[in-house]
Length: 103
Image 1 (cartoon, rainbow, N blue to C red):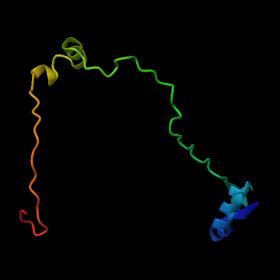
Image 2 (image 1 turned 60 degrees about the vertical axis):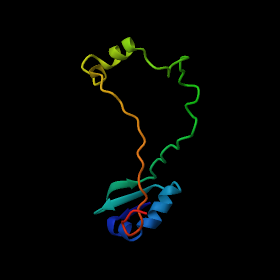
Image 3 (image 1 turned 180 degrees about the horizontal axis):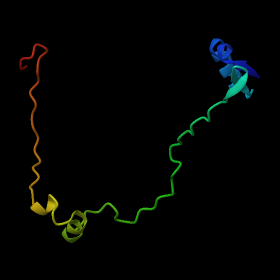
Image 4 (image 1 turned 90 degrees about the vertical axis):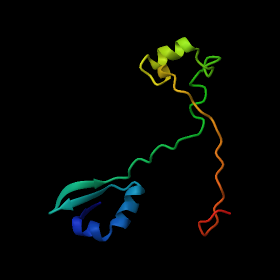
């Protein structure tokens, strides 16, 4: 089916539907075909677990690195090389009432 630009603008929804059903829709300008309306390919759906079994982990892959391997991995100029201590602590956050004052 061939339609002119004005007709395509007027009936675009209908033409899209027909193209989705497989009909070839050609839009012409001044009687010359310029565009073919075709359905876009649907994006492939991602399936959870579709890569299962494709990646193999060696036993102990998540074990901590010893100091030598860690230095090799991070390099000499790394923050780890500077021996910055890591502090773990728990901070208590006071409850705040809706008015902005402590409970």
